[in-house]
Image 1 (cartoon, helix red, strand yellow):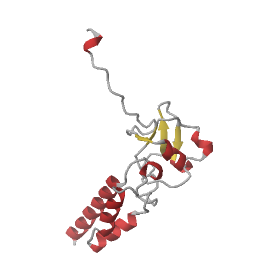
Image 2: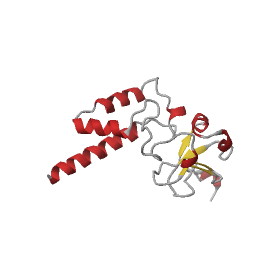
Image 3: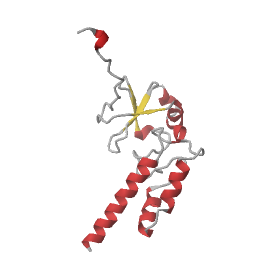
Image 4: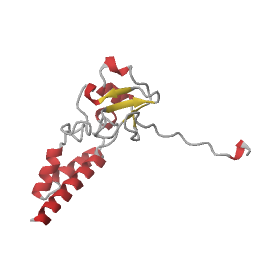
Length: 154
């Protein structure tokens, strides 16, 4: 077949060399914030964040070079469940759990508004260079489902 009529594949996503999860491209700012200088040279730009909470790899590049979550200069969610879900504003899982216990969405709504504001610094503060909104919403829904399940058993 004539190559003029064959569509070239778009850039394939990079996958974590340890767990196979699809990586999330990260900015240079993120790498500078999370990697000590000695480890910064271990991965090249562009690099990816492995979003799997169970995988020990935090960052990897196209050459399958890795940096482990244990070697980061600060804790990163979801690698460390005790790290703030929102790195910019410090929202934690405990804050979301408190909203669910109280039957309100005060903290969750406030963080979503802040995350969508110019004050958010996701490119440099979030380990995956992305807004925390998806993580916040997912964890809130998990907590609500667990509360509903517990109530259904009573």
